[in-house]
Image (cartoon, rainbow, N blue to C red; front, side, top):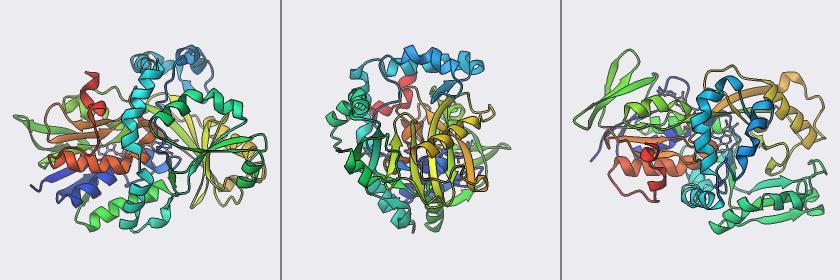
Length: 421
Ligand SMILES: Cc1cc2nc3c(=O)[nH]c(=O)nc-3n(C[C@H](O)[C@H](O)[C@H](O)COP(=O)(O)OP(=O)(O)OC[C@H]3O[C@@H](n4cnc5c(N)ncnc54)[C@H](O)[C@@H]3O)c2cc1C
């Protein structure tokens, strides 16, 4: 049966959901206060990785020992602002527990693998449909270490990846020099995951998907959603700012890091935090990696985008409203200059831009994806944390299946929005 579905939020999850809902024969209205894929969305400024191997949650065994350091060093790769600490403590406790043992991490990886697998292929097909195939590249992602010993220190993550079927190629010494001639020679070892891919402009990709959805009949409404009208477990509509009721048969909640209050109004307590991240762009840079690369030590991803060289990373726990700490973007800039010494140094300031974005993060590194507790007419599709871009294509398909009353194509029980109740 064809339904009128309101998609709340036009980041990558909303854009993919809208396209797939239309394909399934539904009528779609997208509600978004900003520009689809605009700077306000995490989907705009991320690292662009379709990292199908990113199945390891951010928390790991023994991480609790580093918490004092997270508080002490406001510029460390993971920092928690003192003022925010009491508020984030319950989330942080769950976060540390989620990565307490290797067994727990393996279970998360087993859940995430089907969500992320094949993502470059799925995104490639979507981009082609939306008329922007040039934005997707499928030639593997490089994880660079100073030495083999550095890679071996990361052994648990790679062991688990192997257990869930991920393969890679090791590249060492001269072979790495040849593959990445601009890279600082201090890096001598890398792992190439060939199944992975990347997006050359995530913001433009999201905007193109939404424009494609509009061409297929979707309506874009510039507004923010504030709640739902549910009667006898049946959705009557989505409430917009100003108390306007947008009548519909179903709704998809995908407001990224802003989803928590709306999820509560749909009956679900989801402990959602923002892991704030930053990027710096060197526009017009010629030097840099041939493959997109994550760099050990710098804890950042470097990616040649269609409009410049981007370094993205950092995790800052300080809530949605605190002012950005632009020193963090400067750290990324400095790492970028160090990792690619051939870049003009300093890079001309008028060709440098910076950005802050909000990863929508649950403490266990898995999204909230499934029916709401208040009614099956509302589907949650948020909380993708560090893997929202890569997960978007499969998430959109699952959303369409759930709205259509079909069995989802992969197991989604581990993503149950009610798991935190
Ligand atoms: C520095 C950084 C690097 C990253 N790198 C990667 C990467 O390489 N690969 C990867 O897979 N992921 C990466 N991520 C994570 C990824 O960007 C996010 O997980 C993903 O973009 C989340 O998408 P989303 O659609 O859920 O949310 P968003 O993209 O944030 O979109 C949510 C939308 O909802 C709208 N909205 C908010 N409130 C309302 C409301 N009340 N009503 C209606 N609309 C509303 C917002 O305006 C916004 O447009 C990175 C993130 C950061 C910060």
